Each structure stands twice: as C-alpha cells, then as structure tokens.
Image (tube, helix red, strand yellow):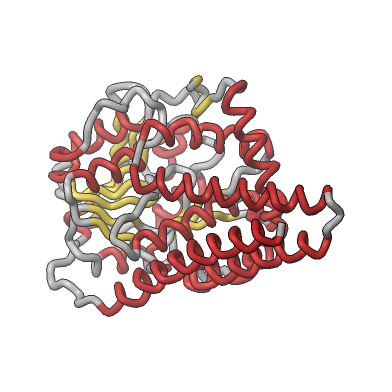
Length: 360
C-alpha cells in the first residue's frame, strides 16, 4: 500500500507542478508582454445579450445599463422566443433598446441573428442575468484588437452556493495553467469578445442543434484555425453571474454541461480531463482501501498530501481573483467530489435535462 501511495503522490506532484508552472507563465510572463498600440474602441463593439424568459433575473443588468451604458456602444437584445414579460421589461427600462427576435431556436441562433444585423466589427456577448464591474467599459478600450478575448466571470452567492461552484473554479485553475502553454480550454459566453470577421471565417453551424455550448464550440473553432486568443484576468473586466440557488437546478446545469463536453471534443481539454479523472479515481480508491484496512495513518497521509498540493496549485488563482478565502473550501470539496461525480454520472444516464424550458 505504501508503494501505491508513493506512486500517487509522485504523479499528483508532477501534475500540480505542471499546473503551477503554467499558471506562473500565464499570469507573470503575460503581464510582461508588450502592450499593443492597436486597441479596441467602443465604437467597434456591438454588445449582444440573448435572452429567453429572463423576466425574474434581468432587472439588475437593466438598472446598470440604464445609468452606465456608453452612448458609443451598440446594444442589441435578442429574444429567443420568450413566453414571459422579458421584452416588455426591457422596453420599460431601456425604451430605445434594439430588440430583435431570433431567427431560430436556441442561443446559437439568437447570437447569429444579432451578429448578422450588426455593422460593428467586434461582438461582445453577455448573459441576461449578469452584472458588470465598475470601470468595465474603460477597461475594454485598452484590450488588443485580436480575434478572441476570453474575459473573466465570477459567481455571486452565499458560502453554500460558492462551495457548489468549486468544480467550475477548479476547472478554471486548469484553464489558467494550460493557458500558460498557449492553449486555453474554457470560455464563457457570459463575457466573450471576438471579431465578427473571424466568427464568419471560423465558426461552424454543425452544432447549432445543440441548445447550449456556443462558447465552447466557438473557442474550439477559433483554436483549430489558428486565431489569436487571449484569456484575460483583469478584474475590471469581470462579469458577475449568480450561482444556482437550488440543488436541483445545480445538478441539472452540471448534467447539461457534461452532456455537451464530448460533442465539443477539444483534444487538450479531453487529455487534461482524462488525467484528472485517473488521478481522482486513484486517490478515492486509496482512501477507501486504507479506511477499510483501518490504516488511518495511511489515510491521513494520502488525504493531507493531496490537499497540500491542491492548495499549492490553487493559491495563485484565488489570489489573482481576490477570493483567497475560497481556499478554505478545498478540503470539504475534496471529500464531496467523489459523491458529486457519482451523482452526475448517474443523472447523465437517467435524467431528461431541460434548458430554458426546452428538453435536451
């Protein structure tokens, strides 16, 4: 058993070191790169906000836009055939808003409708239930004019909801790490900036029948065509999105995300996911085996060794996002994650998942 524990800790140490070095390259070497003189202006950007049945969630965003929207920015709302009062609420708060009706079903079709109607060379996408940072639009204007900017997204919620979001935070840690090797694997359509010309050149409509995943399919298409992509960590460019408020909505969301992952088929993402799965399975097996053998010293060693490495590889990420307190959730999440993975696996095989009142 001691040999198996040693092998696991060595392998996990190699993985953690790879992540730490990649994060260092991404955060530190990226900041030393020369600032380009070719930057984006607000007159270049069309802000596109697709929505469907967001009457209960869109109010905070409308309040912010009403008082903070720069007049030089083009704002387009796209209605994905809402059945509630979303459209009238937008009109009440922003009487001059440009509201389009999607020429199809699903978020991808809604985005395409707005992109086709815009004359601006750049597209910025937000979700309808988000809010934005003070100084967001000022920070946009110092970004380099490149094909794709993946901009930061933070979750808002209480400590219980933040705990449930730890899987996405840990995925982003890996995203930071692999971005240090110039190969980001995650993007969020809640805060994405890209060039319209590149979208038309690279993006495929083959996956438009899948209700979500516009961001991941877009990222994959841009990567495969050699587009220039940057993952931003500027906190002034942060968009805030609410955590899921119930366990039911949380697991439904995770199953939906899980179901689209194989269809994206990003080679780098799949390799990293496979490595993490093997390490997690190895760790869980060792913990259970040592407990059944009543070898609690070995149990403590395997748990504490992994947690120490988890904290080391997570420290720089949470410090950069000014959420260092979330490190305290890692020990609890490490014990919860095997159960979480089992539940997601079972639900993905048995559950009919709905998104925006449409079955997937």
